[in-house]
Amino acid sequence: MGTVHAKSPDTDEGSVGVKMDLQALKRQERERKRRLRSVRERLAFLRRKAMQMKLKKIKARVQRVHVDGLGRTKDDIVINTVRDVFAAQDFQTVIMKIHEARTRLSNLGCFKDVGVFIDTYKGPDALEDGIEVTFEVRETNLLGAKINTSVGNNEGSVSTGGVLRNVFGRGEEASCEYSHGTKRTSSFHTTFTKPFHNEASTVLSSSVYQQASESPWSGYKELDRGILLSLAFNSAPQVQQKLVLDGVWRHLACLSRTTAFAVREQAGHSLKSSLRHELKVDRRDDLVFPSDGVAFTIKNELAGLGGDIGFLKNELDLQVNVPLPGDLVIQGSLVAGHLLPLRNNKTHCITDRFLLGGPMNLRGFEMCGVGPHSDGCSLGADMYWAAALHTYSPLPLLGRGGSISDKFRLHAFVNTGNIGDFVLTDDYKQNLRTLLQEVRLSYGAGLAMSLGGFARVELNYCVPLLVQRGDRPSQGLQFGVAASFL
Image (cartoon, rainbow, N blue to C red; front, side, top):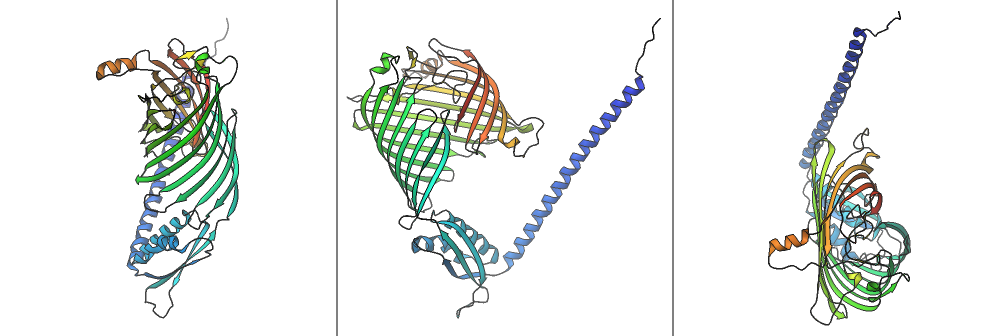
């Protein structure tokens, strides 16, 4: 008869007890480090408060300000920038005002380096608490070159050009730039920018441009040549507005012999002049992976001031972020658009209409693969909406706050939307039924990575649930890179 070998129950219980003790010790060590870090932060805060109280008791007044290194820059904008330092009455306020003045000088667009030196004032009219402040500045070079890369619409591009900085001594800039994209897009434009250095940070810019692009999902290519005038300003903290006057001559051509007739009949030349207004409010704590805050953008465009193109277009982009325990974030997004043709002899074409589908908005479908199609070409529509619900979380096994963990997020999502030439009435319930009829729906999960803090890359596995006739679903892995995602 064989021998049966078995482990002792005492050995298992002891092993489990040791593991539990180790886990408890690790938890205690983490808690001890957290408390120690909290105490250190509290002590540092108390030191800063004590230093501030001491500095407030020291009387000080700025009697003279020197700005060394000025060449092309005009005196009036420099004087207006540093004027506030004379209002300080104690040393702490002096330090704060000097720091604010230095920041404003750096933001003028005239200097590449700004240094500050503080000394007692020793002039004949010197007071006992008089201070002399010297700003040492280095002006930007008049002629410069620039090269940069950008991403958008699932495409990367590189641009290069020359720039004239601080042309007339008040931060003006003239530039000439050429860019080329990975999907046969190219552009060339010359721009002149004039900042006004007021409380609203008003900037006036004008541009002459040429832009070429291809839309393989619709079977056409486009060449635009135009003139643009833009006025941008801040109407409130974190509230930006922009007025744009645009006149453009457009040429649409077929990409291949297989382009649908519905697209071919829109090919040719057109002239569009439009006035566009943009309102943007962004109160998020991060552009790529926000954990809290709201952002929305409203765009209104009226075309038909001249030329043969005329319409009224309205667009909305809304995003809400809500933090949850465990570093989780719930994000809700909504985008919508409506194009209303003008009742005159004006018209509009496929390049003015809305398109939907792809890794940047309605995931789980091919690029512009949702909505009306003809012979494989997406035709777009006059109205659309799309919504998404995301859950973001950091990568597991990586501590929060590291350089790697800050650049990556896991996310799960549900996308829905609709597009078509919907006819709305005064009956709100009927309008809701119209917008929800033949809705599309998809879900999935994936990995997102931040690119330079302004764009991101997504690799998702998508599953389309609701698909309508003519759509082009894309189940499986889907890759996207852009500055803005739904």
